Length: 298
Image 1 (cartoon, rainbow, N blue to C red):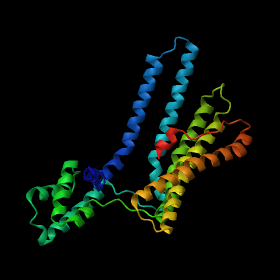
Image 2: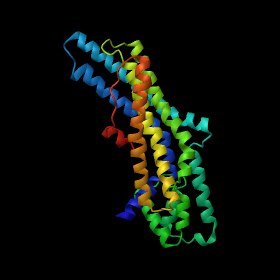
Image 3: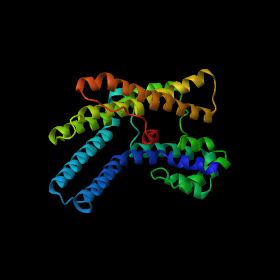
Image 4: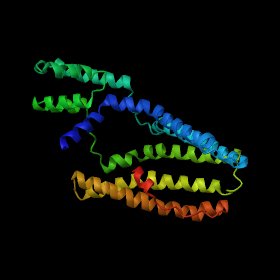
Protein backbone atom coordinates (compact mmCIF):
# COMPACT_ATOMS: atom_id res chain seq x y z
CA UNK A 1 0.00 0.00 0.00
CA UNK A 2 2.76 2.45 1.03
CA UNK A 3 4.75 1.59 -2.11
CA UNK A 4 1.70 2.32 -4.29
CA UNK A 5 1.24 5.70 -2.60
CA UNK A 6 4.92 6.54 -3.17
CA UNK A 7 4.65 5.44 -6.80
CA UNK A 8 1.52 7.55 -7.30
CA UNK A 9 3.40 10.53 -5.84
CA UNK A 10 6.23 9.82 -8.29
CA UNK A 11 3.71 9.64 -11.13
CA UNK A 12 2.37 13.09 -10.18
CA UNK A 13 5.91 14.50 -9.93
CA UNK A 14 6.75 13.83 -13.59
CA UNK A 15 8.19 17.13 -14.91
CA UNK A 16 6.16 16.77 -18.11
CA UNK A 17 2.94 16.26 -16.15
CA UNK A 18 3.64 19.26 -13.90
CA UNK A 19 4.40 21.43 -16.95
CA UNK A 20 1.26 20.24 -18.71
CA UNK A 21 -0.93 20.96 -15.67
CA UNK A 22 0.71 24.34 -15.20
CA UNK A 23 -0.02 25.21 -18.84
CA UNK A 24 -3.63 23.95 -18.83
CA UNK A 25 -4.64 25.21 -15.35
CA UNK A 26 -5.86 28.59 -16.67
CA UNK A 27 -8.14 26.79 -19.15
CA UNK A 28 -9.35 24.47 -16.38
CA UNK A 29 -10.01 27.45 -14.11
CA UNK A 30 -11.91 29.35 -16.79
CA UNK A 31 -13.79 26.18 -17.76
CA UNK A 32 -14.89 25.68 -14.16
CA UNK A 33 -15.98 29.31 -14.02
CA UNK A 34 -18.04 28.85 -17.19
CA UNK A 35 -19.72 25.74 -15.76
CA UNK A 36 -20.62 27.54 -12.53
CA UNK A 37 -21.92 30.53 -14.49
CA UNK A 38 -23.99 28.30 -16.79
CA UNK A 39 -25.50 26.49 -13.81
CA UNK A 40 -26.34 29.81 -12.09
CA UNK A 41 -27.79 31.21 -15.32
CA UNK A 42 -30.04 28.17 -15.72
CA UNK A 43 -31.23 28.53 -12.11
CA UNK A 44 -31.97 32.26 -12.45
CA UNK A 45 -33.48 32.37 -15.92
CA UNK A 46 -35.16 28.94 -16.16
CA UNK A 47 -35.36 26.65 -13.12
CA UNK A 48 -36.06 29.23 -10.40
CA UNK A 49 -37.41 32.07 -12.51
CA UNK A 50 -39.38 34.37 -10.21
CA UNK A 51 -42.88 35.29 -11.44
CA UNK A 52 -42.54 38.63 -9.65
CA UNK A 53 -40.92 40.88 -12.28
CA UNK A 54 -39.15 43.09 -9.72
CA UNK A 55 -37.72 40.10 -7.82
CA UNK A 56 -36.61 38.52 -11.09
CA UNK A 57 -34.74 41.70 -12.05
CA UNK A 58 -32.98 41.66 -8.66
CA UNK A 59 -32.01 38.00 -9.15
CA UNK A 60 -30.66 38.78 -12.62
CA UNK A 61 -28.65 41.72 -11.29
CA UNK A 62 -27.17 39.55 -8.54
CA UNK A 63 -26.29 36.89 -11.14
CA UNK A 64 -24.54 39.49 -13.30
CA UNK A 65 -22.61 40.88 -10.33
CA UNK A 66 -21.45 37.43 -9.18
CA UNK A 67 -20.42 36.48 -12.73
CA UNK A 68 -18.32 39.62 -13.21
CA UNK A 69 -16.61 39.15 -9.84
CA UNK A 70 -15.96 35.45 -10.51
CA UNK A 71 -14.24 36.09 -13.82
CA UNK A 72 -12.26 39.07 -12.51
CA UNK A 73 -10.98 36.90 -9.62
CA UNK A 74 -10.18 34.06 -12.04
CA UNK A 75 -8.21 36.46 -14.23
CA UNK A 76 -6.31 37.64 -11.16
CA UNK A 77 -5.46 34.03 -10.24
CA UNK A 78 -4.23 33.34 -13.80
CA UNK A 79 -1.90 36.33 -14.03
CA UNK A 80 -0.73 36.13 -10.38
CA UNK A 81 2.21 33.71 -10.85
CA UNK A 82 3.68 35.71 -13.74
CA UNK A 83 3.44 39.02 -11.88
CA UNK A 84 4.79 37.51 -8.64
CA UNK A 85 7.67 35.85 -10.50
CA UNK A 86 8.56 39.08 -12.31
CA UNK A 87 8.54 41.17 -9.11
CA UNK A 88 10.61 38.65 -7.12
CA UNK A 89 12.79 37.40 -10.01
CA UNK A 90 11.64 33.87 -9.34
CA UNK A 91 11.95 31.25 -12.09
CA UNK A 92 8.65 29.99 -13.41
CA UNK A 93 7.91 26.28 -13.84
CA UNK A 94 9.53 25.21 -17.17
CA UNK A 95 7.01 25.02 -20.00
CA UNK A 96 6.26 21.71 -21.72
CA UNK A 97 8.78 22.32 -24.52
CA UNK A 98 11.66 22.99 -22.11
CA UNK A 99 10.66 20.04 -19.90
CA UNK A 100 10.86 17.76 -22.98
CA UNK A 101 14.35 19.05 -23.80
CA UNK A 102 15.47 18.39 -20.22
CA UNK A 103 13.97 14.88 -20.22
CA UNK A 104 15.63 14.04 -23.54
CA UNK A 105 19.02 15.18 -22.26
CA UNK A 106 18.74 13.07 -19.08
CA UNK A 107 17.70 9.93 -20.98
CA UNK A 108 20.28 10.36 -23.76
CA UNK A 109 23.02 10.72 -21.14
CA UNK A 110 21.77 7.52 -19.49
CA UNK A 111 21.98 5.54 -22.74
CA UNK A 112 25.37 7.05 -23.64
CA UNK A 113 26.78 5.03 -20.75
CA UNK A 114 27.68 1.59 -22.13
CA UNK A 115 26.77 -0.16 -18.88
CA UNK A 116 23.17 1.06 -19.21
CA UNK A 117 22.50 -0.37 -22.66
CA UNK A 118 21.58 -3.84 -21.42
CA UNK A 119 18.24 -2.90 -19.91
CA UNK A 120 15.24 -4.88 -21.16
CA UNK A 121 13.26 -3.80 -24.25
CA UNK A 122 10.16 -2.66 -22.31
CA UNK A 123 12.13 -0.42 -19.94
CA UNK A 124 14.03 1.00 -22.91
CA UNK A 125 10.76 1.65 -24.75
CA UNK A 126 9.26 3.45 -21.74
CA UNK A 127 12.34 5.59 -21.24
CA UNK A 128 12.30 6.65 -24.87
CA UNK A 129 8.59 7.40 -24.57
CA UNK A 130 9.20 9.55 -21.48
CA UNK A 131 11.39 11.90 -23.53
CA UNK A 132 8.31 13.70 -24.82
CA UNK A 133 5.26 11.94 -23.37
CA UNK A 134 3.67 11.61 -19.92
CA UNK A 135 3.82 8.06 -18.59
CA UNK A 136 0.82 6.34 -17.02
CA UNK A 137 0.82 5.24 -13.39
CA UNK A 138 1.35 1.62 -14.50
CA UNK A 139 4.31 2.59 -16.68
CA UNK A 140 5.92 4.66 -13.92
CA UNK A 141 5.45 1.77 -11.48
CA UNK A 142 7.11 -0.67 -13.85
CA UNK A 143 10.07 1.65 -14.47
CA UNK A 144 10.61 2.33 -10.76
CA UNK A 145 10.46 -1.37 -9.86
CA UNK A 146 12.73 -2.41 -12.72
CA UNK A 147 15.34 0.34 -12.35
CA UNK A 148 15.51 -0.01 -8.57
CA UNK A 149 16.09 -3.78 -8.90
CA UNK A 150 18.90 -3.08 -11.36
CA UNK A 151 20.69 -0.48 -9.24
CA UNK A 152 19.44 2.55 -11.18
CA UNK A 153 17.50 4.27 -8.37
CA UNK A 154 19.67 7.39 -8.71
CA UNK A 155 18.65 7.70 -12.35
CA UNK A 156 14.90 7.41 -11.71
CA UNK A 157 15.26 10.14 -9.06
CA UNK A 158 17.06 12.29 -11.62
CA UNK A 159 14.35 11.70 -14.24
CA UNK A 160 11.50 12.25 -11.75
CA UNK A 161 12.97 14.25 -8.86
CA UNK A 162 11.81 13.57 -5.32
CA UNK A 163 9.91 16.38 -3.55
CA UNK A 164 12.18 18.89 -1.86
CA UNK A 165 12.59 18.50 1.89
CA UNK A 166 12.13 22.21 2.53
CA UNK A 167 13.66 24.06 5.44
CA UNK A 168 12.37 27.06 7.35
CA UNK A 169 14.83 29.19 5.37
CA UNK A 170 13.28 27.91 2.11
CA UNK A 171 9.80 28.86 3.26
CA UNK A 172 10.79 32.32 4.49
CA UNK A 173 12.75 32.99 1.28
CA UNK A 174 9.57 32.19 -0.66
CA UNK A 175 7.23 34.29 1.48
CA UNK A 176 7.69 37.36 -0.72
CA UNK A 177 6.71 35.42 -3.83
CA UNK A 178 3.83 33.56 -2.14
CA UNK A 179 2.51 36.72 -0.51
CA UNK A 180 2.36 38.61 -3.82
CA UNK A 181 0.96 35.53 -5.57
CA UNK A 182 -1.82 35.23 -2.97
CA UNK A 183 -2.53 38.96 -2.77
CA UNK A 184 -3.31 39.45 -6.48
CA UNK A 185 -6.48 37.27 -6.64
CA UNK A 186 -7.68 38.77 -3.34
CA UNK A 187 -7.15 42.33 -4.61
CA UNK A 188 -8.81 41.64 -7.98
CA UNK A 189 -11.73 39.96 -6.22
CA UNK A 190 -12.26 42.82 -3.76
CA UNK A 191 -11.68 45.55 -6.38
CA UNK A 192 -14.03 43.95 -8.91
CA UNK A 193 -16.67 43.50 -6.21
CA UNK A 194 -16.47 47.17 -5.23
CA UNK A 195 -16.50 48.29 -8.88
CA UNK A 196 -19.51 46.12 -9.69
CA UNK A 197 -21.35 47.51 -6.65
CA UNK A 198 -20.75 51.05 -7.93
CA UNK A 199 -22.11 50.18 -11.39
CA UNK A 200 -24.95 48.01 -10.08
CA UNK A 201 -25.67 49.44 -6.59
CA UNK A 202 -27.60 47.49 -3.99
CA UNK A 203 -29.82 49.83 -1.99
CA UNK A 204 -30.33 47.23 0.74
CA UNK A 205 -26.62 46.95 1.52
CA UNK A 206 -24.88 50.25 2.21
CA UNK A 207 -21.79 48.65 3.75
CA UNK A 208 -20.78 46.26 0.97
CA UNK A 209 -17.44 48.06 0.31
CA UNK A 210 -16.29 47.83 3.92
CA UNK A 211 -17.51 44.22 4.13
CA UNK A 212 -15.54 43.26 1.01
CA UNK A 213 -12.35 44.95 2.19
CA UNK A 214 -12.71 43.28 5.59
CA UNK A 215 -13.23 39.83 4.01
CA UNK A 216 -10.29 40.36 1.65
CA UNK A 217 -8.06 41.30 4.60
CA UNK A 218 -9.24 38.21 6.47
CA UNK A 219 -8.55 35.91 3.53
CA UNK A 220 -5.08 37.36 3.02
CA UNK A 221 -3.94 37.29 6.64
CA UNK A 222 -5.67 34.13 7.91
CA UNK A 223 -5.49 31.96 4.79
CA UNK A 224 -2.38 33.13 2.95
CA UNK A 225 0.34 35.29 4.51
CA UNK A 226 0.37 34.23 8.16
CA UNK A 227 -0.06 30.55 7.26
CA UNK A 228 3.29 30.68 5.47
CA UNK A 229 4.82 32.43 8.48
CA UNK A 230 3.37 29.79 10.83
CA UNK A 231 4.67 26.87 8.76
CA UNK A 232 8.13 28.42 8.51
CA UNK A 233 8.27 29.26 12.21
CA UNK A 234 7.25 25.72 13.20
CA UNK A 235 9.98 24.23 11.02
CA UNK A 236 12.51 26.69 12.42
CA UNK A 237 11.75 25.55 15.98
CA UNK A 238 12.17 21.88 15.02
CA UNK A 239 15.45 22.65 13.28
CA UNK A 240 16.73 24.33 16.44
CA UNK A 241 15.72 21.21 18.38
CA UNK A 242 17.36 19.02 15.67
CA UNK A 243 14.12 17.08 15.06
CA UNK A 244 14.11 15.61 11.53
CA UNK A 245 11.24 13.09 11.68
CA UNK A 246 9.01 13.73 8.63
CA UNK A 247 5.74 12.98 10.45
CA UNK A 248 6.60 15.38 13.29
CA UNK A 249 7.65 18.04 10.76
CA UNK A 250 4.34 17.67 8.92
CA UNK A 251 2.30 17.89 12.14
CA UNK A 252 4.32 20.89 13.31
CA UNK A 253 3.70 22.72 10.03
CA UNK A 254 -0.04 22.01 10.29
CA UNK A 255 0.04 23.27 13.88
CA UNK A 256 1.86 26.43 12.78
CA UNK A 257 -0.62 27.03 9.97
CA UNK A 258 -3.62 26.64 12.30
CA UNK A 259 -2.27 28.60 15.28
CA UNK A 260 -0.44 31.43 13.50
CA UNK A 261 -2.51 31.54 10.33
CA UNK A 262 -6.11 30.45 10.86
CA UNK A 263 -6.43 31.52 14.51
CA UNK A 264 -3.81 34.28 14.77
CA UNK A 265 -4.66 35.72 11.35
CA UNK A 266 -8.33 35.73 12.29
CA UNK A 267 -7.63 37.74 15.45
CA UNK A 268 -5.41 40.26 13.66
CA UNK A 269 -7.83 40.68 10.74
CA UNK A 270 -10.76 41.25 13.10
CA UNK A 271 -8.71 43.71 15.16
CA UNK A 272 -7.82 45.77 12.06
CA UNK A 273 -11.43 45.58 10.89
CA UNK A 274 -12.82 46.92 14.15
CA UNK A 275 -10.10 49.54 14.76
CA UNK A 276 -9.51 50.79 11.21
CA UNK A 277 -11.94 49.63 8.51
CA UNK A 278 -15.13 50.03 10.53
CA UNK A 279 -14.36 53.60 11.75
CA UNK A 280 -13.15 54.74 8.31
CA UNK A 281 -16.31 53.55 6.56
CA UNK A 282 -18.52 54.32 9.57
CA UNK A 283 -20.08 50.88 9.39
CA UNK A 284 -20.56 48.03 11.80
CA UNK A 285 -18.85 44.91 10.50
CA UNK A 286 -19.60 41.55 12.03
CA UNK A 287 -16.64 39.69 13.53
CA UNK A 288 -15.38 37.01 11.13
CA UNK A 289 -14.70 33.58 12.63
CA UNK A 290 -12.76 30.68 11.07
CA UNK A 291 -15.01 28.30 9.16
CA UNK A 292 -14.51 24.73 7.96
CA UNK A 293 -14.05 25.97 4.39
CA UNK A 294 -11.14 28.15 5.58
CA UNK A 295 -9.34 25.16 7.07
CA UNK A 296 -10.11 23.09 3.97
CA UNK A 297 -8.03 25.47 1.86
CA UNK A 298 -4.87 24.49 3.68
